[in-house]
Length: 269
Image (cartoon, rainbow, N blue to C red; front, side, top):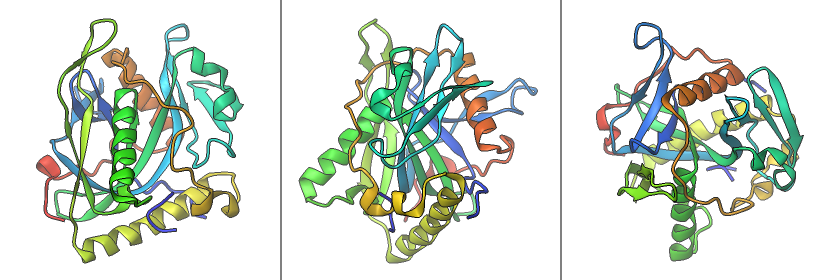
């Protein structure tokens, strides 16, 4: 579901993902490191408002040495996922029938968010969470709904994302899942977020083949199709960089066109 309930230019100013090994929220800057590219960490805690939440596929194929990416959907039960890696389509299927899930592909969430940039202006960003990060997100969503009885709990107030405590995976690797905490916002900020949600919804309607009826709030799913297992990521820095580039190729965005968040992005909302 989205905060509110056919133009396809992506409105996101920044594409972020959680680097669990370092416990950092990062974006990939292709121009950094003398043009060699580099993952850039943003300050924590990072505070944002959720505008919309979709399901997608992430992960890495060791056999192909390529990362997986896919379209973003609201309902895994009604909408197919087209899973790709650089240069080819891997498969198109409903989530429960995806064969690539046995070959390194992972369930992920694509979070369209609003955050305050260095000019204290609310702008649109994108956060992809998978592995231990998507497990932490699902727990935050589930626990909030159970505690309040509000199915739109994650859309009420802002969310502070920070580094959690160190965990050790089955193979002995250390990693840091994120934590999420709700913080209050003003009525003015809430209205600004609603306005930005309209921009995101317009983009999604123009970029996805589904009809408007398929992506109304009633068709959105509140829970993922299966509970992902928390795990330490297996990607190297080079693999993570390749995944970022694949995402940017798929979205047709300029990786150098970034609106940086405010330092620590912990501004009053």
